[in-house]
Structure formats: structure tokens, C-alpha cells
Image (cartoon, rainbow, N blue to C red; front, side, top):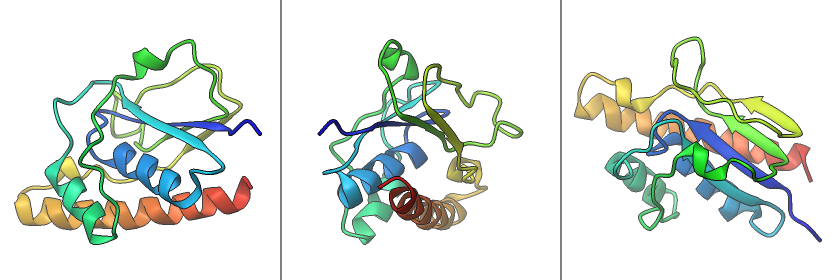
Length: 140
């Protein structure tokens, strides 16, 4: 069986998309291939995202940020943007997908301080998890 390929996109690929990729692989990696990328490649994963995912038993510390352009030419069944194009002008568009979804998850990086950013990261994690669970139900 060929597994559908899913590409999660956002601005920097350091937080939201990394969590989405990890949730899909954890929940349904036997049914989907998943990768994530950003318009602008971050230098490292967001430490708050690593901590937030550890809190739910998923280790993303070994993942690394990637640029969307490295996947050009690949065929994806679904491309999911985790940014709001109305707010984030660098939210990428990717050609050639069968399905295109937008999950407008707030960017934790816009928080005003460390405490707010950690809380925003946890909210984003929980929202992404709900989206992924629903995605798996709808596409399997």
C-alpha cells in the first residue's frame, strides 16, 4: 500500500509544523508519510515546542527545520498550511497537492514574553493535536 504524503507548511518550520508532523506520525504513521517545512528555514526547533511535545510523550528534539523549496518536485496528497495568510504574509503556497487545507493556528512566536510564549505553544499544540485527530478520521 502506498501511503499518502502530507506536507505541513508555515513560516519558519520551527514550532507548529514540527508538532503537526510529529502528531501525524505518532497517531497514524502506519497510514501516512508526513514532513514539514517553512518558507524561511529556522536555525533550530523552538525549545518550547520540544518541551510542549515532551509533555504529551512525543520527542521532537531530533527533528530539524527544513525549507519548503527542498520538496519542490515531490508529489503530496495533502498540503496543510498552519498559518493564517491574512496575518502571516510569508505563509507558503505549495503546488501540486490533491488536497489543500489551512489550519490557522496562532503563531506562539508572537507572544510578548517567555511565559506567554510557553502558554501559546501549549495552546497551539493542543489545537494541532485536535486538527490531526480529525484529519486522520476524515482521511482513513
